[in-house]
Image (cartoon, rainbow over all chains, first blue to last red; front, side, top):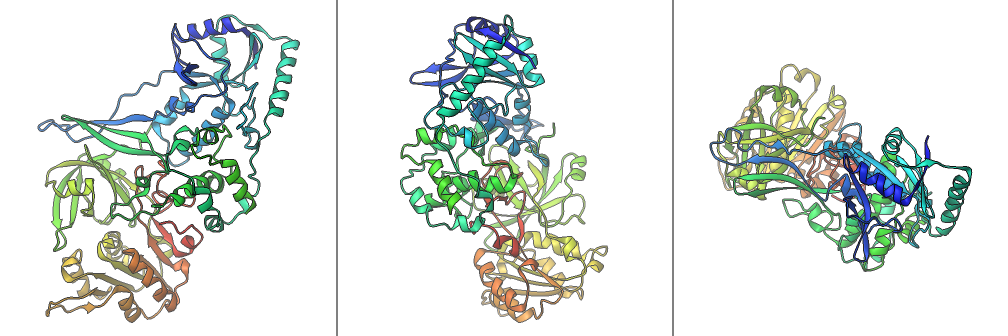
Amino acid sequence: MTTMLFSKDEWGQGLLAVGKSIKVFVPVKEGDFTAFQLLAEETVPDWAYQNTRMSPKSIVYPQSEGMFKYSLEEGDPEANIVKEAPKDYTLQAVVGIRPCDAHAFQIVKRNFDNEEFRDPWWVQRYEATTFVGLGCNEPCATCFCTSVGGGPFGKNGLDVILHDVGSRFLAEGLTAKGEDFLAGLTGGQAAGEKELGEAKDLEGWAGEKITAGISTDQLKNKVVTQLFNAPFWEDVAFSCINCGTCTYLCPTCWCFDIQDEVFGKKGDRIRNWDSCMMPLFTLHGSGHNPRDKKTQRVRQRFMHKLKYYVDKYGNGIQCSGCGRCVRFCPVNIDIRQVAELMNNY
Amino acid sequence: MENPYLPYPVRIDNITVETEDRNLKTFKFVFLNPEHEGRFKYTPGQFAELSIAGKGEIPIGIASAPTEKGFVCFTVNKVGLVSSHLHNMKVGDIMGIRGPLGNWYPWDQMEGKNVVIIGGGFAFTTLRSSIIYMLHPENRPKFKEITVVYGARGPGMLLYKDELAQWEQRKDINMHITVDSTNDSTWKYNVGFVPAITGKKITSAENAIAIVCGPPIMIKFTQPVLEKLGFPPERIILSLEMRMKCGIGICGRCNIGDKYVCKDGPVFSLAQLKTMPPEY
């Protein structure tokens, strides 16, 4: 696999050139936060960012996405027949994605791309995407990727990984897709022993900076109905205001709603991110609601991530340790504490 | 790539008002493209999403049987946005069907057994599908005794009244129709709640499997009756309802524990349900 060294100027120029034929997303400062934006001539990427406020899941799975179109025009022979909405699957690259967020796509893939059903939109956009990761020299205080199968330089789900070695990026191709991406860049030179050594040191230091952890080793052995009936859920949910921030920011939350919207005689069937924090999520037509209390909804969120997912796929928890829900929860609910309660119950 | 969210276009071929309150209608659909009928290959117990452009989709059990060719039927209760709109549609209107979805009653396990069917109210739809399927001359020899307990609030609230009357006349199915109460002096069947009639009419769990579909209150009181008769939880089969959107286990809302009612269900044995969180 190729390992190349780029000056940051060179890297920026290279991306601009690549951006003429594919869509390139880079982290950009937006007010107090950072967000992924489509790279344009005037874009100033923020390579020193810690992590974006919103996860980059929308690049593969938009918050709102047209599924079908239809006509309601009387007399139209095709009226009331839903047709696939036209889609753009131009090749794209997310450059500077953090390893936790790339890992999250692997966690979510088990839902959208399984043996029985393949979600055509998620799968095709995912397949059109190259993930160019930027290792974390300075992880956040809330990061706990190292205890959920990742790390500040974790390679899971990445096609290329970048090490920020001062004024330069060390870029390592990890997959054929990643090699193609690097081959398409201008500039760069072969990396020497010195830079490879620096990169190794960075990985070591960054790993040591992550002190927060999460205990998950016992979760798979717990009896689901016992955990479900555990006495701590009322306490965990007590301060929750059901705002749903955790679910919208989370890179591994995938639930969606389907709605029809009509304008004049034309309509769209669209899907929107949804949240298990909302009472409407499970409300039956009859008025019955199996999760009408907030404690039930909070329990669902944690049980899904830390127990149901574990049981269903046998492949760890549904969390990549990015820490967004911990940082942005307005009432300080902390998944690490909940995992501790569940794991030790 | 095949799109599992894309409905097959269908035309409403017939509409039957089933109940005296006019809240339940049976819609008979014909596929616009005959090839789609071949692809819509279902087994009794499954459901589909009825799709109306501009309104949305609703998950409804399939009321017709795979032995009935050329159409599919659904009996729909008028409750929300989509079902209310559907009730105002007319013969000839175009809409969509997406499916078949979910699992089905355990037909392999039921072969060679006595089958006890217990239904209440408008949950009788996939049970009608099952009865038609079992009574088909090709299938009837596969099952021993077939016994049906079916109840509604009153005589006017029973579904499929003509077929119920025909089944009453047959020797190869034991029908026990009941109503909660009635002032109708010509009523010639049972009066009483489904659990009580079940206790009276079903005498043995020997080599039998029970399929129970109905409102939660009926299921709650029927369960101990069946257990007293000696039905083990593995041989009590239930079909659940849940708010659904995608119908294929992806959108995330209809879970009970790690099972999705739309994909892993809607049919579960009581034994399975006992290992799952009681959140339905």
